[in-house]
Image 1 (cartoon, helix red, strand yellow):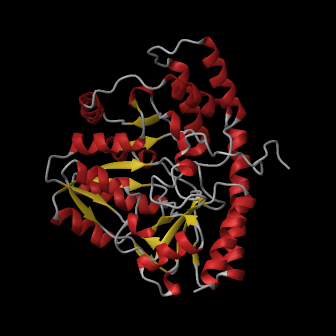
Image 2 (cartoon, rainbow, N blue to C red; image 1 turned 90 degrees about the vertical axis):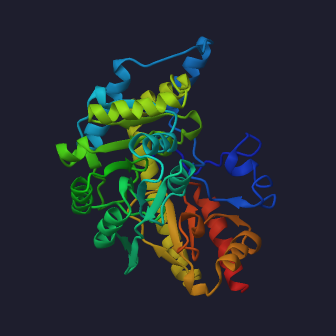
Length: 392
């Protein structure tokens, strides 16, 4: 037993919680068990809560900014955990990574330009491209031997044929759980440099890797890659702080940073939520031990799902994750259409998951499940899914 109790059941209902309190508004039945949106059912690290309480007691919540000690907390975290040495002038703070992606799309492309992504991928990538009237170009990941890989020939061909100016890299990759190797990232980076394609690397899940896998910050590979990249990070997934809206975007190249900041300014945004800043500094200063125990608990959850599927629902295959607390399930052996699979999960299993179709039109036979919950909740979800499959 560690210092922190991740088996504690925290009732999130009636707290204006998107995950638990908005089933009806999202077209789901009341009482459905939600394992969809990527936030956790665990209380954040107590050191973060203490910092927020102390700030709240001050009682004044005016315009706020952070001084050098904020960056120092980030610097120490990324240097310690990823051997990546950042610089304070690289840092641009935004209210979220998706906000930053949309700003980058506007900053580095014009209407009609191609923006490349690799589906299946986090669905706001596509939204940011289309909502800003850019051309979404997909280089589909190849599902081979139970793992997803990049088709580099297709990747380069799509860049050449579609006037691509920006590539949205998901690293680690959501939803398939890949932690890209250094060699894979080098190949991506070299192709993008060759064709003058800026790389935006969404590294919001960087702190979640399983044993044997190491996350490599894209900008840490070489100075050339750093100057051609926008690195998006946040404490939101790592420390369950999404509602506080703070992200830390690193842009080493001064010209690109200026263009990005101009796009942020055009959105009318300036200072961040003071509580988000307080929480982020506390997280990166004091949250290491809590995160270590959390990752061990999540690894146990993953082992539970792996064994449960083998013993009870062998038709559903776990796409073995290398990172993330979101797992990707291949349900194609059930022989159901996309619509039938959705009905099975939602109506028969009474589970609210993320259907694969939202991550790309070719993955309607998959489901994404958030395993950042208590073992009891996860067991209940798996049992409901098993009973539903047996009823087919």
